[in-house]
Length: 325
Image 1 (cartoon, rainbow, N blue to C red):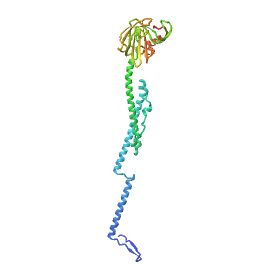
Image 2 (cartoon, rainbow, N blue to C red; image 1 turned 90 degrees about the horizontal axis):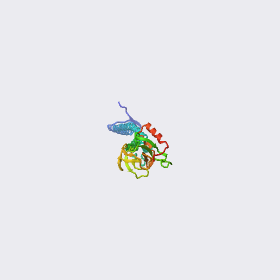
Image 3 (cartoon, one colour; image 1 turned 180 degrees about the horizontal axis):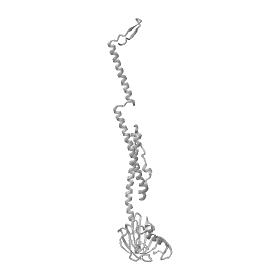
Image 4 (cartoon, rainbow, N blue to C red; image 1 turned 60 degrees about the vertical axis):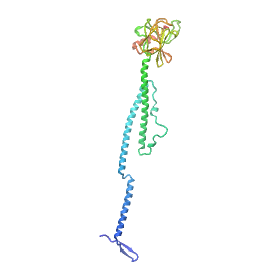
């Protein structure tokens, strides 16, 4: 049984019972129902805008963002591995390949240079994980640049390797007369006594004495530049242009086996020992030029002499005797 509620009636100065009609009951119910709806909506809005409660869409988005972050972390680990590999290739490139082929190393600053000027990553700013995304993108850009630089470097090394093979075939690297055909190595490079004036003068080549008609061999690949007697003192002589700044000269020949413009290979017979020009006897006067400067031919006999033969040749070449021309 419900309790009876009273109200004070000032006219009768007494308490009178409150009469609850059906209309009052309905109005109270409606008021309660609307209040409940209002408070429910307010509570729902508060919950939706707080971290206590997420909608299914937000939960799915949060899960997706977490997955993206995880994927970025994996990508950064892979980038670290790629950076290590690239660094190893760059190290071999600078300290092995480019050293071997006599190319200047690529500076570290050039390989690691970033991108100056405008902010390339402005569109990636303003997000929860912007720093992670920007750093990853920068690493990818730098790695891409490093890869391009390294690719160009390897292209250059490939060209140098091709030139190196050609250079090794071209360098005048064998003795122009075989040891078994030599009478002796008469005179080396350096100050020697002139056979005609008996005065000391600089001898710019090496003299190999041998019988007249002994074959003379090209010391490296090249093109015959001259095969004539129009150079004072040399008599019949041949000059071979080997490229790369190298020229070899063979003087006092009895006859030629090649003509100007002929292509020759190392070991080809180009002429024969003689006694033409300013010569004190049958011999071959041999010179090497590098960039138009005469250099000591003794430094180039690594192609067909044993270490014992080379040591003996060095000993003979150091003797300050009389030259043959």
